[in-house]
Image (cartoon, rainbow, N blue to C red):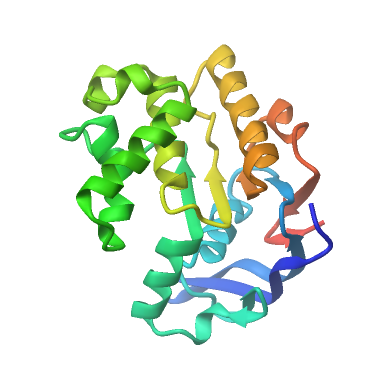
Length: 225
């Protein structure tokens, strides 16, 4: 972990309209995440953890405030530039892996590369390498429905790594796994950070997973305590 601030959240707020009322989910958040840091975001359900992660991943725009990435204000970009930034710089891992069931493990990992314009042969070779690194070399040609829950989540992690992003954002990545499989994913995330110096931000209720992190941010009522 370096002393360089990679992500800076400044005066961030997010509100949603519910009928005639406005629900403020995030309230004046201010914090930074260092390059190469592993950070857990914890707190009760409904406090805004996933909303915050979606904003950090530019899947949504804030009501007010800024998120700076390497000192660039992300939300000054138009939607097209933001989508390109997201595909190049952010890898997502969700509780429900959102793999495409009609495709193989390799094809799922190839998808972000093909979207980026990488040649199919090169995308296939990179997918093979990443899946091999995650001990899925013998499952490359299997459709995702033929894989166990833990294998599917590892494919999702491989897909998140496909474009070699600087940041991995994970939303309850072990929430749908049994304890033993979840612990394997914990080890894998830690190994990825150590081997590739990725910046990792994880929303989790899992205390064992948070123990692997460099820092834990606790959220309550839309604020960082």
